Image (cartoon, rainbow, N blue to C red; front, side, top):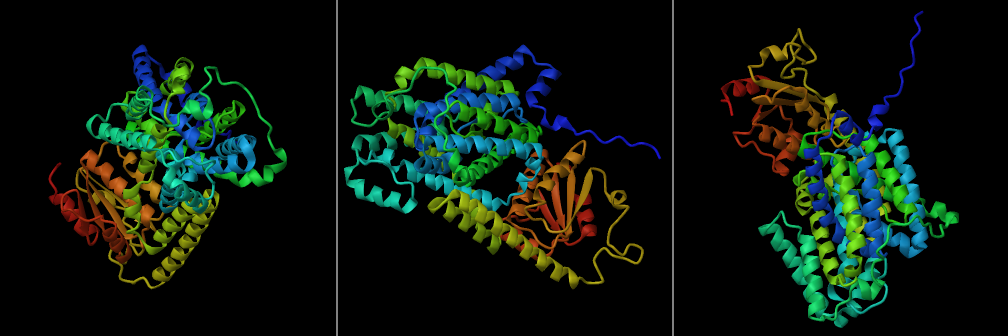
Length: 566
């Protein structure tokens, strides 16, 4: 018997993209573009890092330290060419609650545990599983986090004269209403002006750093006009002009079990948000990230951030998109963004004490608005009833109670909903007609081995068999990658798709958008009753040009032959 060597593990899936880039060659011109992009992202990240730290219940320099330490390591070790890492708004509710209950030492322990969880997830190749999280769960907790961020900023937006803000949702709003008569007009004026300025710049000058401009002008107005508004200096005593130091406060190890759920939430958020950001970046640059390498990098970055007294970190979608639009094409841009932030902190620290907290709260208000994904929320509310229940429940639990509970309940409810749908599929398939549209005596299963021989030039076809739900929706994105050149017409055969959910419709819309950008017309053939109804509910209609419906494959072929070249 011949000896078969054991297959060695494919460790290249953990190779940082930086090593791949350098091995293929790195030019001076690429470095210039990366340097410009890194500087641009640093300008955006500077006010954001401070605002996120303050909203999380800690001091502004901890946000900067996180962006510097974790941001550098995420780019250095990550599996994406253009990912920008640092503190993000998604962590605000969980970080605030951990500090409130367990102190800053508890947060350090949470972040360390989350880092080890992320490394384990990457080593166990769980990165590929995180994309199967249903869209209603992701949108629900994201929109809920946006509401939590807004609720955390009311004190600084209005300049309310009150003590510590309660962590609980209802107690927090009760305290706000009690102290509303004691608001500071100067703080409210700064908040409104800053939001208006950021919104105006985004409309009129979208390439300008609106956050930084609003913070600079707000600081100048507050200082020159001697406005009685609270500043970083008046609350925190300023920002030290020093390098991040390796310093570990007291860590309550005896409370590890109590902190474990929060650690899991931080790891979950870091993993999901970083991979979502990497997927968005792939779509913008036409690349492909290494999901498990990205998780390992996120884990290492969070451990390092904790050891340097920072906050949890992950990939930031908005900063990553800014990096790409500014010309960044390799991980060097992300590493330089961290270096530029370090320089800014050392040089500008004495001036940052004058930044009004109302202006930073306005920055986070805009972040929360962008994070709410209102259009996506409204779109999912037109989906099946089960998806709507998952969306609303996850949103309400996140906004009003606890993010950890919201994620757990959302995932469990989505799993039960999936099992219920599968039971319905079995019932439907048991009554399938013997006279199926494509079945014949020689080919009883309805498949067509000579399908490609029937296709006209420039026409491709793909058949989906089974439900198009959240666990398989992402496969649609890989369909077009199989062809060397975009086809003129693409026939998507859906007669064997008994049902589609909101995640499936979202994936289908993204697929149609990609086909539209490539000039490919799409024909959906053989739609069953449930998919046709759900597509209509969620505004996916045949327009007679880019998208058409056909009753069967033969009719789709006739339509394809009649379609002219785009």
